[in-house]
Length: 271
View 1: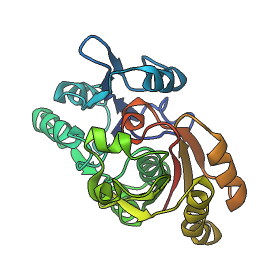
View 2: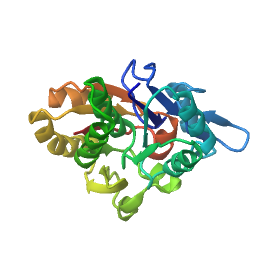
View 3: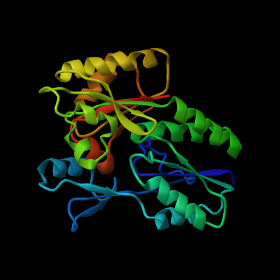
């Protein structure tokens, strides 16, 4: 058999992809204190997670999958000739390292690739890999498609507050926006796997306008789009309506990434 793909739970997957026989997902976990640990996108619905995030006095922490979880996925796909692993950015999580450790234990070649992305961006990269697999491409062609997609992938997102990125330590170069004027609502992007500031806007409407200004040329050029949101779909609906372009999928951001971006976040990715 041809190529199988392993990813982690921070990758947004369109409906039906997770159920494919050549796909496995290694889940991360999040915890509200030592007694409350949950498997990402499994143990709590996204609605339950965001309700808990708003109400809990304990800030959640997140954990990468242990190497054994990846090794189980590799072994479950023994019938496939080639295994490709696509992980969340190594600058945001230790998941890549766990996948590499497991690859060294697998007793067969396993290719591990850092997508330098997450959620809808990683989802688009995975879809490019599947496209080539479904077209009958060999493993080298699949890898080249993934490498091209990683270079092209852009993620832009808006947050209601920088508090969650700061507390989680994933704020990256957006650190310099902390302590700025009241109601500054930045538009952020992921650059080489790290969160960086893109534009500063005052108030939600100007934040939306800044996001639209950047995304519209990509939409007009017909680039492949995917959308994501945290707890509130309304801003995303407004974004989609303003761009007048349907994405290949819309995903709700799960508990692990949601722990870092917080309620009110939304955005898009494109290739």
